Image 1: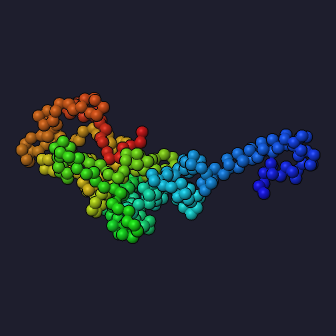
Image 2: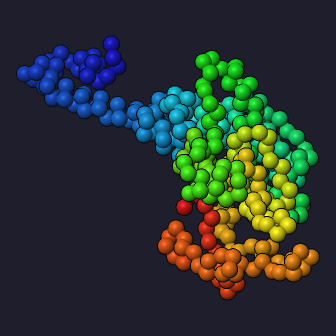
Length: 339
C-alpha cells in the first residue's frame, strides 16, 4: 500500500468521517492536497541528486559543479560523472592538469586520442587513449623567446597519436579518428594554393567552433580546471604524425626564412587560442628588417608588395603602412574564442 495521506486517511479518521455524505469528500480532498505538496517537496529535494535528477535539473547540477556535459554524453553517464565530483576525484583535484585532461577527454566522449599538458619548464602530464596517466620532466618545449623561469604558462596538446592501437582494441571499431584535416574544397587557387603549401588554411573536421569554445571555457573563470596562477596559452590539435616541437618561433604565425616569410608552426597541427590576446595582430616588427647582406633592400610592407589597404571581414579598411601598424586586427583561428 502506498504511503500517502489518501491511502492512510482511513487509519487516521473515525469511520463516520469517511462517509462522503458526512465529511469524507472534504477529508479526501485535503488528503490529496497534502499528497501533492509532499510529492513536490520530495521531487525538489531529489533534483539535487544527479542519479534522480531530470534533464533540466541535471543541467543545473552540471553548471553548479562546473562540469561540462559531453557533446554526445548520455544522461546516465553524465550523472555518474557529477556524482564523482565528490569522490574519488572530481572537485578534490580541480586545478590539477590531469583533471583538466580528463574533462577534455570526457567532453569528446572519452575518445581514443592522447592528451597532455606541458608548461614552459618542460613538465608534461600525459593521459593516453586508455585513460592511463603519467608524468615526465625535461620535455623540450620552447614556444617563444621568453625566459624558461616564466613557468606559469600551460599548453594543452590533443593528438591522434596512438589512436590506431586504441581503435583496434574496441569492437566494433568506431571508424576514423575524431580530429581530421579538412578535405579539399575544390579549386586550390581559390583557397590560397594547394594543400600543404604556404597560404593554404584549413580547419579541424569532426568538430565545431562550439566544441572549442566549450573546451576553452574549462580553462577560464574563477573555478577553472587549470592550476591557480597558471595562464593558458594554446590548444594544439595534432591531426597526423608526431606532435610538433616548438623552436622559439611559435609565438607568431610566421617567421623570416632568408628573404621569405613562411609559416612558423607545424602544418600537421591546428592551434586554438586559450586567451583572446593571442589572436590580436599588430604587424610583425621582424618583417621590416634590413637585408644588407642579401640585396641591400628593406622589407617594409610597402604598396608595391602589398595593397595600400585591405578590407577586413567586418568591412573596415586596414592600411599596411607604418602609421597604422599599432592598430590591431583579429586573426582567425581554428576554434574561435568565447565572448
